[in-house]
Length: 100
Image 1: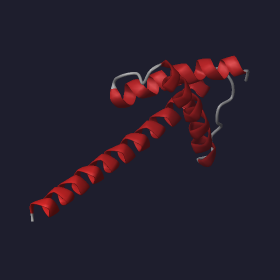
Image 2 (image 1 turned 120 degrees about the horizontal axis):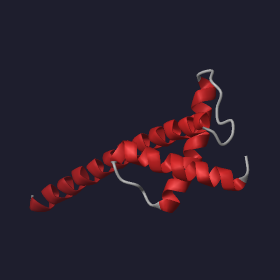
Image 3 (image 1 turned 30 degrees about the vertical axis):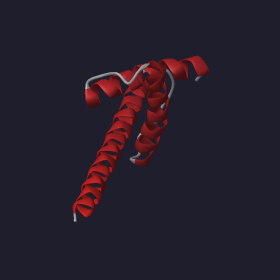
Image 4 (image 1 turned 180 degrees about the vertical axis):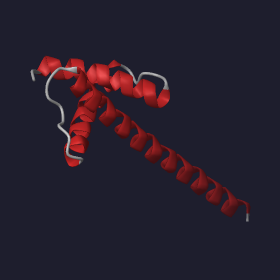
């Protein structure tokens, strides 16, 4: 697959994946990166479970890339949520020590 085909597949897959997960696009550059990395992740996942990964610029490869982008976004948002909760807990703990 050519470099331009990867960018087009990445843009479309990243945009669809971000719409599925958080209902908004992440921006054109981040959608492209998300889609390309999602294609790699999706290809790895599909190969792990015995299916074929990305095969070219076609609908099946788009499906693989979207699945990878969705998995990537779900993991990213879960980690981000945990980190923000940890910051809140740490801030509350620091505040309660100051009050004592």
